[in-house]
Image (cartoon, rainbow, N blue to C red; front, side, top):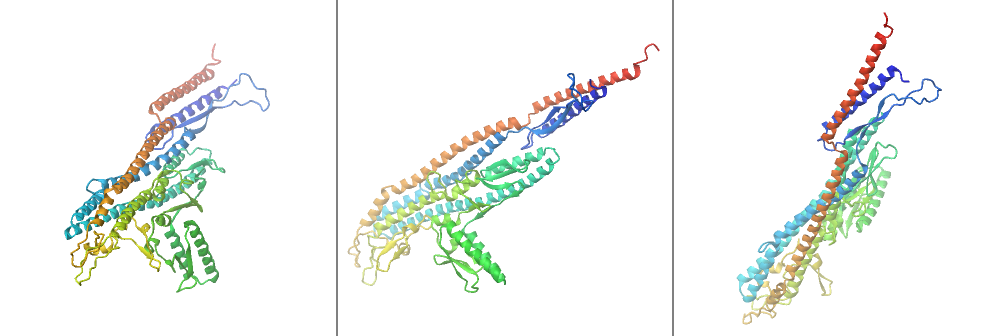
Length: 587
């Protein structure tokens, strides 16, 4: 049977556990409004009884020695955590993409307002052509057409510049988010170390774990992540992006952001190292590094960069693209300032790319969610199914090219008005209304480079800009005596081309596509918001603190404490009788 003093120890253990439960309950209540706090509970176990001797049969009426605390455990569901972070990455992607598309829609809607923006300038251009067709000899009418054409091209330029500005913002956001991810990865490593140190003692670092989980939740909004317990120390976690390690226990890897300009700047830095070195072996090693990097850049960007010895220092390597110098000695120039870039080249050369531990992270493969995915899509996608900014820039370019080519093809057939004062007519044909680059093969064959026209460089030709009399209205030459002032056949054809409404239809089609894409994204965003809120509510029901429940627990633990106190009081009374009263009967 248990000893009298053993019963005291049993009751004492009950008091201790009741106090610990009250302490944890108070901690829960105090942190009820703390963001990221996880409810804690005391895990207890019955103490086994000890035999009196080393070798003794088990007694059937043997009792234990009370209760003991095994651990302080967080009430948390790993499954719900995983679901929340997966949904958070998808929600953040949709949220970021929706914001960008909303800005684009606002930009286009303002341009489609009747009498304003692109729509208004097309209408004004159409009206000015119609007016000139009624009187081709009127200088006032010609000036009105010239000004309306300038306004049309400037509106195209303005919209394109706004889109380029948004593209630049999204491209910069890739770098900004990457820096944030790197910062969080570094902090996670420090928390891994702190938790591992603390838990070596056998105690649970619950509050530090809360901080780490909150950080993992935040990280999941920036990029899709996978989280696993570290193989060598379960107190630590490993984090990866698309299977590529970001955090490995006590090591953090950094997202590296690059584009062609940063790659070229790196080669210029290597040239500077060559210039500063006097060691032939070191110089040879750096030259090999430059050669290797050049091969990697050519493969990565699908270009043909070439190198040559620098004029001032033959050991340094100058880099050029199609004869255009990009790196001269230790100086690199931005590729966009050195040469004109097409939209495809802009995306390829200037779009920020990501790598992690030497592995490139590709959109749709390693990068599949979070803000980072949305920014990369907005910078690179020309796909109508998942349209980014380049898709709408491309559509606007097509519209500008269509107007330029169709009007030019008609205008070249006509003759300008004669303004000669020398007795010889200077009424000419073959003039361009809108500016287009041409290439002569040397044999009189002219190739018009309409693919080089963008909404950003769309402009009237120098001949139309120089003189309104160069606007060709007639399909016959105007003679010097003005007895034949020509006709309005050409300007009427231009009017008919605009009257077909294909340009309005194209512009409305672009905006319609944008509206559908935005509506789809908003619908998906709302669905993902609901799912995220649902999972978060489930997670809170498991991990969150309920003041009502914790208050009830306080009463339970208080009563347990009181009960254990009553046991001690009862044993005290028994001992008092045993010590002070036994053997006194009959005295």
